[in-house]
Image 1 (cartoon, helix red, strand yellow):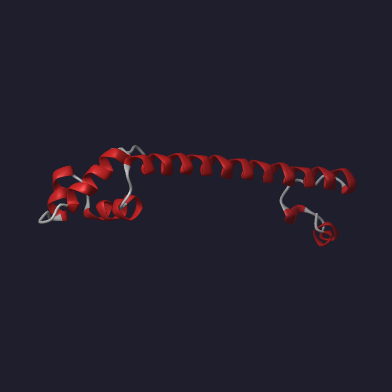
Image 2: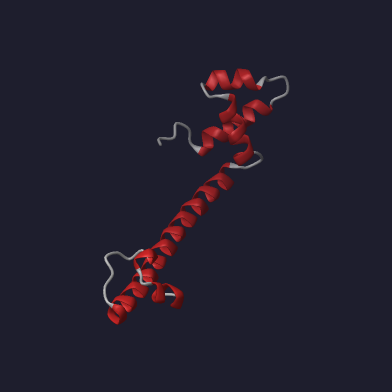
Length: 109
């Protein structure tokens, strides 16, 4: 999904709406965004400075990277369990736990 507005632009739009006497509907119309989008941005970026928004974006990226690393590690662990099982009990047709014999499933393979 392509983002049309940067964090700096979003914060500028939110600040524009904070000016007394300004209608949120008018600000949304001026910047061609839905009111729902405005309120979502306000919940996420409300009260932030541009530097805070950049730090948030960096942390979200780092968090996504760490989640991918954990998922890959879980696959490695599961693969190790499958290799241990197949070397001891014979190779099943797939790695899904349902493909294991009942005795292996009870044993926690």
